[in-house]
Image (cartoon, rainbow, N blue to C red):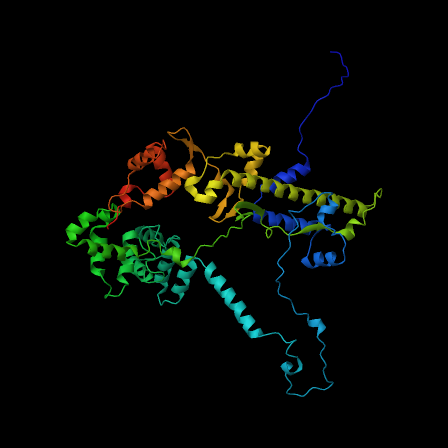
Length: 502
């Protein structure tokens, strides 16, 4: 085998660290991006957050602002947003001079020495507010088990009954329902204690008197029965509700109201009152004991209509105003290979890359949002029924970007419109052919489906086949199985379960 040297030209696509950072920032949500910016501020001394006071001072001195745009050789208009001007001014205690005599009376009070302007306002009230806030957060963060244990600690029980109660509480799920049978709980305790099943049932009935009402029930029927038993005896239609719950629960589950009314010999309005009482009960009492945390959505883009035109703007409050520290940047010396200079130079380059990546993210997000608004203008004007079919490839071709970039730019990004806040992915949907030759969006079909169900008669709800015929009459060629799939996605029950009394 003969060895030789060859010269060969080739092209390879490599993802640089700058491009990797830009891609990573593009797919981050608002909260994740804020954490990323805070981490960059903590790790890079050349990055700093610009204060509104500094911007006003630079404008008064007629000096150019030492912003990130100047350092990165490019405008960063999307990154420079002013903060809220209505800030609460903090009191500077060092500016108040206190004149104190050399000798103080024995019964002197500090309030007599401090002026009214320098004294803090109502410290006791502040501590009370803080304590109330801590107590409220503690109560909200308590689990159902902790609340039941707290009520158990206030209940007088023997040691054996207390152990049984602990086993029952451990077998209660977040809905407030027992996940183990009484026999299983009894068997788990007979290894250490000499107890019988009647004693376990007696302790169970004691726990079922705890709050929230209906807790520690073995099934749905018992859960509702506990809540009915704790209602005042003067409650209207209470005996009839107990009778329906004990005898006709299967008919109630299948909405066979006619059979219930005939067997109980009730009139239609009377049965309706009985069902209203049953519907006021809570089948999952554990949810009321522990409220779920509310997750707030921060929109990335605002869409508003001004002068008959739709305007698309980035949310100025989600990204702080960043810039490069001019003092540290001026310390960087060219040609100096010292350790300190190398550290500053590397951090300066990283800061410029980070600011350029933020600028690229904002520009891409704004381009995608503008094209989406331009394509879905009918949705903004008339609602979800006017939504047009749209896929990622359509936006990618419109702004000359790759489809994967559009996917990253629309993930976990939200658009604030006059019709509500929507994720950018909401505006993308498949299409269904129409008899007239056009296409209809699946989102529009879902909106039409909800409209038809909302307008149906409670006594005779629309079946999936009937909804299919109604849509075919409007020119939408959709199959019955498609209607069934959309109905399940919208969490709409079948027609047999939607049947109600007038």
